[in-house]
Image (cartoon, rainbow, N blue to C red):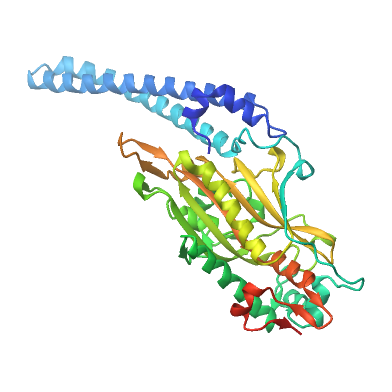
Length: 424
């Protein structure tokens, strides 16, 4: 959620940044500030009326003490009128404050100035490519055929048990899933991230805290009886650990990691792009989250991008890094870099990670602050997160790119975790 104080003090910059997002009228910022002006006026009027009430209440007490009952009763009638007036002002103030909050909740984060202009994914900018493209034979198979051939993933069985998008991993397929999770968690711990095992359901406050609500409400699985939401990513429970928390400046940065299954409805997805592991309703992912000092968040974002690149490179996968344009940058993000790996049998790029800086957008929703060491004042932190990594498309690329006549070769770094060198 954007800060009213920032918008008021930096309106020109805010309009310029919001204008980078297609479809958003910067006039909404003027409406927002006008509503806040009205809220301030109502608060001033309310304070004045309440002050007069308090003054008269003291005078009434003094008059009763002096035995001047008639004068006291006349003043009590004035107080009664003031109470009615203050009640009306309080309701107007609260209604205006609620309208302002609704407007703020619907406003996306402001893209950074370095975010490329553009309207859609076609305008994203490739900033780096790495790894070597595999050379496959003409009869190379996509991962869904390889999964059936080696009996490591059963998509039909998952469809029987639950529905499409819920695969069943078996044998070496299950073991390589477990190997990838353990490998990613170990690498995160080596980088100084503290591992958590959070709940897989969150409450409504947590959803609003990180910006999934109200923006992505239709994409989340909602447990209506208890009003819980299945986590779409570990970002939500991890970041909300620090909701309503004031940190000491020396505690920053906070680095967290977690493995969770992730649940997404993926409403509207259809066609060839959802086949196999390309798009699932339930999938495994290791997430990294930073609670960071505002002065260091951009530097931290670059470090996180470098770290995710090192993971992909260690898996011997060809990859590219995209700087998302403003039109493709997520609702809560101010700057995002996506990672894609190349699945050679499909001959297509598959997204496997998004690494984002949310600046103070999530922190303002969650009221996550730190106390400045010198001034003692409270300031909003910056939050960042990234997939490190999401498993399904990583596994798809590993299966497709490493197929040989003898079987599927396991990347060297995973062999100690898998306990085997080949899927055959």
